[in-house]
Length: 335
Image (cartoon, rainbow, N blue to C red):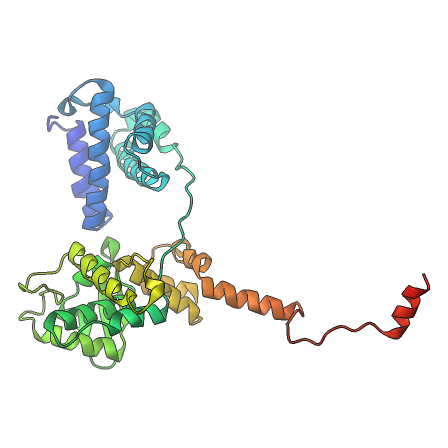
């Protein structure tokens, strides 16, 4: 691909540098995900039109090619409908950018934008009950520096419902460990939110903050004093969950990840009676529809609703037994 204005490469560079990063303020995670989707699409498109990638043209980006790519994603790559829809969302975002800068191909781009996402089965959200979270925290040996760090990280994730990338981005300057105790979380799309933290969370974080030389350095670090990675956090959480499963049978069939702790925070807030709109702001969701998923997955709340329904229906098992009156028996006997 050449770099002349109006070429495919020029539009790709402008989309990522100007639109995604500067205009939308997309996170690096989003930039990488969209980049992966477009890379896969261009590699597929090159095979589809029988030309190398560097010779692809804007005229090659058509609805038929996009539909063929989406079918390839599911059949050849074995991805789910959810992943297929994510790839489509990335392509539609890029094509929408093309439409604004290349109006001569408006009909071509419009047909791509008209492709609807595929209906996908909504997976049940995995989460831990408060007792299970306590069991994981209780088995961590806080006498060691790594154990103290791990407990601080886990309780921070559960307390704030932060995404793992948000937690790893926390610096001392983002924390206020005295009353009112809070943390400033840098979320997706460069959005910030402020979360209150428990006294226990603040106590666990103080040694980590004291061990950092700069207010701009990350507080969650490994044994070599380098920033923890997402994979590192996933590994240590899974390790502690496996150990806790030895004494807590309900954890034996669970795959505990950083995002499971985020879900656990949301469900615990729901169980405490917190309004969904407040939970949306607490977790940093852009849409209330995302937060509302927790209403459908919370088994304890469903049990409470069923119990209330049972009592309201007058079917409480403690109610007295119905006994037929003699007159009714006499009437029936006379039939």
